[in-house]
Image 1 (cartoon, rainbow, N blue to C red):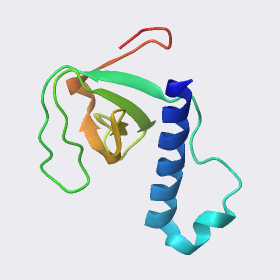
Image 2: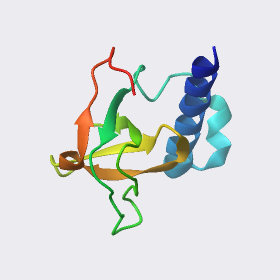
Image 3: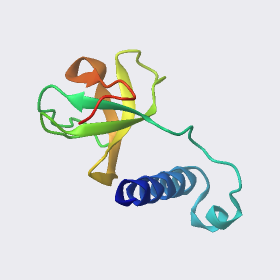
Image 4: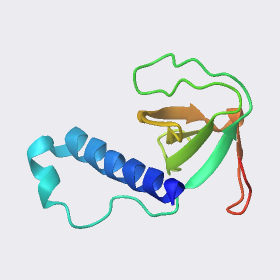
Length: 106
């Protein structure tokens, strides 16, 4: 039950962030279609990663990242948010993570 609430909060935060980036805050209340497919794919960080740019994600070894976009301008990078803190969003190198199976636990 608690995990379901966490997913709902993450889902709403991601919708809001996407809309604010694209259209500003006024259009958020008019959204009727989800922006993301759920459940999101998850991955575990194999190494620490310090962001070099504002659009990159900083994370530590062992962090779980929810993948929000697998197709970016660079095929070696994906976009995600930290499962523990959905306000931390950005691009990350694919080589720094291990993709988790749907049934695989943290």
